[in-house]
Length: 331
Image (tube, rainbow, N blue to C red):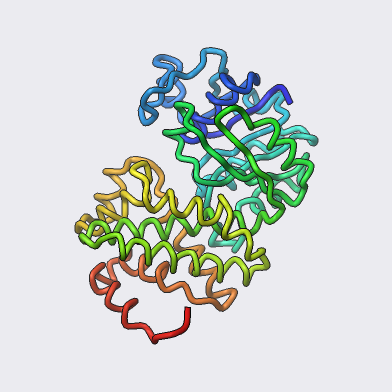
């Protein structure tokens, strides 16, 4: 693998592109649909939300999708989940048949009740060289400056997962493999919703006891849905499961946690999205999570409470009361 294309120049896409170029010595193209975004990167070689990282000059910065995909042995989709299907559809004619597809977005598609790898497969018509979900406790801000990070490459095609494992691993970025791509993707989508709940708790002034309960019972919700969809229960104890949930609920880098905190402080959803200024994937995942829960007949009380709070139907303090007064049961 000598040529990697990253589609999406947000923090995660940019951090990965920089790492693959500088540490892994690949030829890298970084694409964005936003001309202003690419123009700024060309001028400054810095991403405004990645302090301390300088983008290697060897990276080719593109706004033309055909040029971006040409010659790539792996194409990494790093666009926010609501834009994934259209981006895959637009890129499909330019992706080689033997190219490995890597998805680093985290979400579910509500309209189709598909995971993101299923969305990609439906648009490409086949798996090309394999579809790999790359997921785990990986804040871009830390990867961008070379802090130790571990992540999971998951695919139905384990040869593809292992190729990405070897291609992406380096002295500070360790990649494990896991064949349970459905479980990995459910974890990646729902952990962002639970992080919003943890942030709301922080915003209300509640302590570590409440946060620990939200994380633990949130993991129970994620596991319940994933297993009902056919995922392996062991996946939810993995780096991409409890590992990603813990970091997203506790890190100062977490957009979803920050969004929840602002909601807990009484900010409106419009105020929150303006202040964060980047994609809040937990909000994007909410409609899909509830649709999946209905389809598979499982209860997601924390996710449901976050949904009602963000739609203005429930005050955050009242949500806690509802959850605490649910019927007593065995853990």
